[in-house]
Length: 435
Image (cartoon, rainbow, N blue to C red; front, side):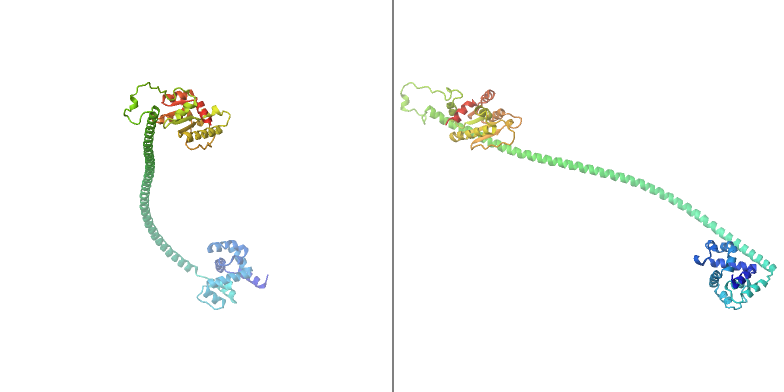
């Protein structure tokens, strides 16, 4: 330890109690202003305390450190001089300050260490205050302060009571307003929920109505389209029926005209209706044999006589004929050979020919090119060729010559009842096979 440190330690121990308490108070006040790195380790735990608490708790540690740590004392002296600039500068410069209290001046002198700091400490130790006068003055001053404090406390208490009363009244008003606001909010929420439900229901009704209208519109459009199609079909059917009626009438008239002409030629009737001179000569007239009455049904001559009838329609049961004459040939070959032979017949006799094949015999698309004048029909699904032949016979006007070629007894009997003539497949085969 240095001589200065020893002197400082002996001086510290000889400090009067008032000076020591003031030194510790100033040091504790300045301790809170120092950086943590400048605070000695034993004092760091007191640095964050309040100044009064710091001075009370750190007194036993602060005094020895101030007496032995010259660097720490100088840091404390710097902070104290900055807090008391006038008195600190005067004491540091050795200027007498008569108005200063001896204890305060001695404490600052101990920390700042001017040349006369020991004299100032000794002067403070020699001052003996008049304790009785001080006690009376202190009691009087404390009494006045107590009365003043009581008065102020009473006034503050009254003000606080008024404020509490006002706050209670305001709190009651606010609570009432809050309850009213909550009730209004609850009512508005209920109304909002009701309106939301009503809006949702209205939207659903509108959507349902819109969907119903759209369905009705689609139904009406479909109905209009259907009616238009029916109208168009009716018009087309009416036109076809008128055209078919005209065709049937024309065919019937042509048949009657040609039949009358053929009958006149066959009977050798005179062109006019007047009596000729040769008619007056008596004699026995030969009897005319009916045409086609003496030949069998499979006679080619009878077939030619029937084809010679005016406006005759020849209907051929296709597979009934082909399976009779070409049973071992493929079906497509049978069909093509038959229609080719019928084409040659049409070219010779100028007759209307329709060939009907059974559609159930088909295994795919039909590859067939009929010659000019030969009509080819396949029976639709679920319908046999025999029924199509009967439909063709029914479609012709009454009185038109119709010849059906089929060896099927049921077909022959049914078309005879409908007014047509039936021939066997052999008669057609004999005719188309003849050069």
